[in-house]
Amino acid sequence: MLLTLTLVLVVSVAVLAMLFLEDQPAIAFGGPPVPEDVVETRAFVRGVRAAIQPDQPVPEPFSTTETQLNSVIRLGARFVPGFRGRVAVRDGEIDGTASVPLSFAGRTKWLNLLATAPEFDDRLTLSAVQIGRHAVSPDLALEAGRIGANLIVGDGFGDSVLDAATAMQIRGDVVSFDLELNEMGQNGVMRGLFGTMRGSDLPGAEDVDRYYLSLLAAMDQGELPSEGSYLPYLVFTLEAALEGSRTEGLQNAYTSAILALTRVCGARDFTLIVGGLVGDAPVADKPEQDCSALTLNGRIDSRRHFTTAAALQAASNRGFAVSVGEFKELYDTLKSGGFDFTDLAANNSGIRMSNTLMAAPAEDWPDLIARIEGENDVIVPFGGIPEIMSGDEFEQTYGDVESPDYLAMLDRIEARIDGLALHR
Image (tube, rainbow, N blue to C red; front, side, top):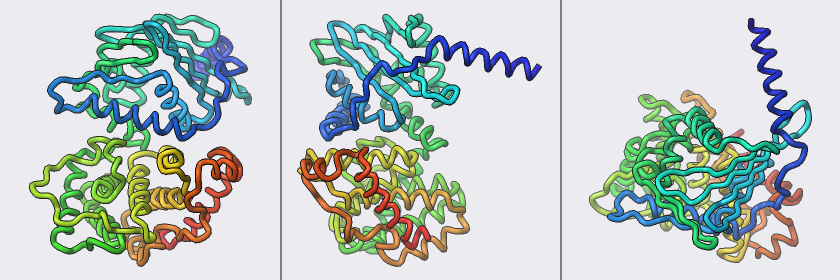
């Protein structure tokens, strides 16, 4: 019986591959993301976040453009190696094309998808779907996507995504959506998605709040400095996570604690990335001190990079966190006129810290924390690492973020991180 089922499965996969897989992608490789893609993606995320705020008296439509959507796709393609996609906006509908590489019988085959979504009022519909050279029922494809998302992500994720947009209108190349707050703003879709990427559900906002309020109390009571090195904040947070792990488990405690620390001392846009994951505990009075003057490796921006990257790593997987670091640098080449490998070194040091601590059992934590006697036990010194350079200089020297020279510099940074006391 088992042999028969296995044979049926193998034959079915082979038949499906013959029907739907193709030798070539439907979309030519468009190159790595550029700084403009990061700017457009940030604007896209900000627009969605603004449209789904639950305290709005009257929800506002979210508008985007063909250019912006394609930037989001180019950036997101870094999370799925080899993925290619694009959208085209025309009168009354959006055409989306995707090419996904798959390994089959020792060769790379391509799953080419084409879908057309017309304007709608009430619920997303598709007017045409094609897989490879074969047309597929749009309703069947949409239902299969919904069920697949529910199974892969859980918590009715597919249902929530389909219900999130209640209307779509197209004017020229501008696409406007009415977004359903109950689905996107309050049901934890993003928390579930981040949890799936990490492999388990993320802690709730109330878990983060406990560590956040503990940090604020220590700051107000003078237990943590208001200037100088940021290191005492990091050690305080790790010790609090170790204590909390006794009741909530190490993974949950560390993730909650590092998210709370990032809310206090991380990048200003951190809440834009992860939303309610950072907690929402009310604070009666503004703390008398903050992290604004604290430094890591003598720099304020290094403290922000290191902390935020560590939190993103705890909330995601390595591929996602590293990509965020690279995209931040791409954005900086356009926004502030330069690319800085030292910022990337700070990002990757924070990422590696989360990797090391989350992989270690609780009984190893006291020794790991004891190794952190100075800043360069957790973050690489910046000597010899290229600092800020213009976008033109970066392109002339390194080409892009896929080039051998760029990847070689990343390898040098990673080798330095290997030698830090925390990781030896």
